[in-house]
Image (cartoon, rainbow, N blue to C red; front, side, top):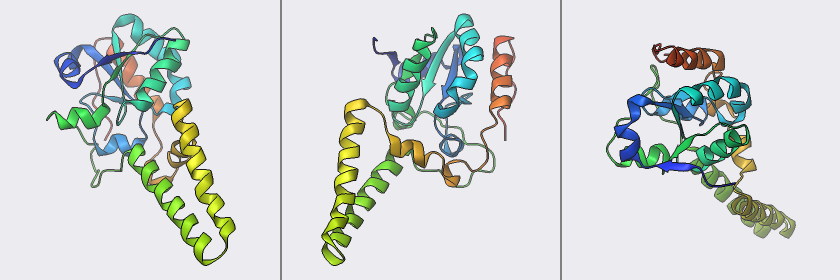
Length: 201
């Protein structure tokens, strides 16, 4: 399968009003800062949105966004398997913000949730360090914990998947409230009919 089309932040900014922007990060990440008008459809709920995304793609271009571009590329491939053509934002919201473009924050959000990539790095590093320390102080067998994380990271790089991210995405701080997918899909249908409801607070 060919790689999805990539738009850089400048290209995306110049076309933002004609694109349907789909943010596949967790609700916590989305609330902490997202592209103007972006719809939050977490990657693990993408299947439920397929019919509406298919119709949206028939009526205009869809830009899929995440923190760095990794999850959005995965989402683009999943959508392509269902006949839905999309583009991904190169570098994700991190690159968007780095170029000085505004990120909108959900009302009532006081602190930004770390990006999933940052959470994975912190968690993996902490578990490796813990395994090494316990291996020195308690029993050498604890070093297998570190080896397991190292193997998991290598597998993650080879397959471009991340089981740890899938687990972390389900933790309460990444989902400060349930993703209201029904409301998001209603907004998506509103875009198709020429009007866009306000982002949920």
